[in-house]
Length: 133
Image (cartoon, rainbow, N blue to C red; front, side):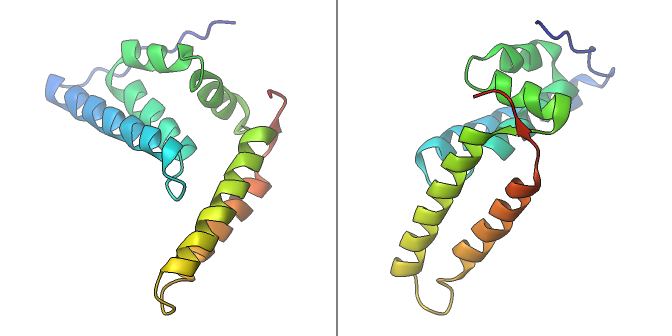
């Protein structure tokens, strides 16, 4: 099922460029998060989709049609849901990276990444789980 997004509100050209730049930077940050364990991917991809929806229908449609990121954005928009496998992968990588950070960071601040990841994990636990695998 192809979703047709409404065209973005009429905005000045410079403001559309600001939205496009923010969306692209957010998407790049999300892509870095694929390989950097403490940096999450999903929130940045969702932020990118929002920015693109404000700046360019073409970029938004490209992201919605993307084989890897499109389903994630569509699930979020339709039901604020995250696939179970994505939740499980996030929990495992957050746990591992928090343990590594705790091991290598000074004792005074070594608990900070784990606390942040625990809050994100709790938030993610409360989200609905989508049917998509």
